Image 1: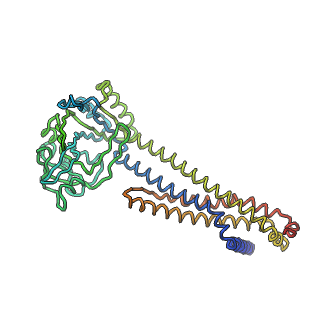
Image 2: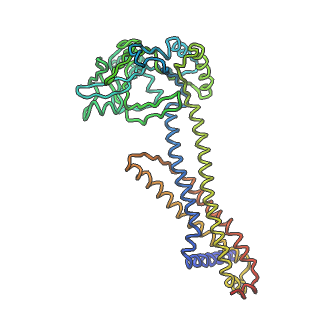
Image 3: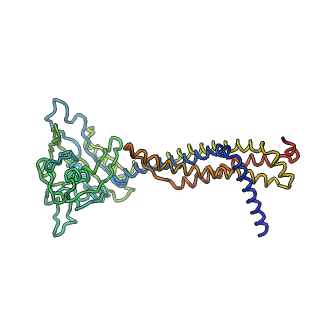
Length: 444
């Protein structure tokens, strides 16, 4: 116990000497750790902004469902359009035969058919162009959104004394997105009120909570803004408009004949997703031939690719920030070597008074370590300030800059700072300890 106390007192004295030496040369000490401060701040801020951006991308993919398979109808360039083909009806996409095949997929827990078209949604003097989606009650389960009020489309499993099967009864009911509700019903409760879609009246039975849109992914996926959607029963949509849909927007009119615009399959197990997707792609290629009027999206593939990209991006950020820390360590070594030369006489006096080489090494190591620890702490404060301040400044200009503070990066930065201090302070410390006491005392 006594030996431990003696050693502890020696360490305390050495610590006091090191801090006193740093305090006497404050500007030089600050400049020597500036690289550590910048490197640590870079690690924290780059990781926060990088993780935030990647998290948003991953969340957008997860909202589509990691076990989902999405089959879309894609309008070929030659279908419709052109001054000489204005009256022609575009006929493309998923057919009745395709739907009958998809219904028989064994691994599908839920199969959601969708007919989608842009329409003017009106109420009195209010109008909003939105996406009308004719679908079934399983749409909510597969897409996992919440309702702000009311209910979603009812199915046979949800029928009670007060609620009929919307699809079987072909009821004119609608569930609207948050933007539709805000535009058509300002300061009013939309439930049980009527909207008009292409001359047909629909009663609002539910309103969906505001939800972030999904981003487009390549050529097989398009962006979806759920907040401007209106959901109606599938059989109601087919009964009111038939297979041929006339799309009337401001100043334009077109028509198309598509059996289904999209089918989303929720697969029972993640291991079955790729094999099922390959089987669907093979079947569609066989029935559609060279006509590229369909697209297959498997969010699981995009999720795996995005996670791998995130890991590579994280390693790259760590490497870049580590270079800054190493450069900072070299700066500390340079200053420490200059300090050894400057304090040669002091080292000689300490050796003459009985200080051992280990004491000299410990003193200079503590100086280097204290510098890097202080630099690391200042870097953490600077990095966190940067992380919180930049998104606020970006919001003033209407930009959303997502952040996700990675707390392990803070701990890692501090640990690396200490390691850098020990690693780059060791050589100057050993060099100081190896000075000959007599020669050191003669040094001017």
